Length: 120
Image (cartoon, rainbow, N blue to C red; front, side, top):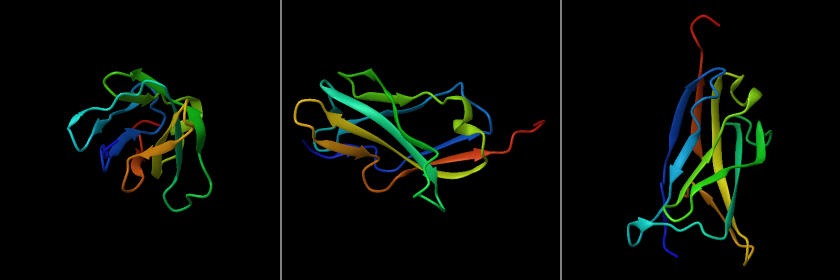
């Protein structure tokens, strides 16, 4: 397996928004082809950037939207987006046969920015 991209990722949303999932399309960085997620599971993690040891979301199941095309997502739930601030996130994928794991984004955690909503 080559590199799995994207390398860096930022997702902005408003406080309380849960309608648009955070989604990533993974591809093999060596061959620029879709990364097959057949036989994988996915979990989502998110913690405040200034306190990564205190997770806001700690290994909640994500969804493999399209295994053949390498598309994963996490659908925001209830209190996931109730706090304004800057958060780090990652998806952890586990191969169900070998048990091997890898996380994306690769180089560093992705960033989620939850901004103030007018009228709230």
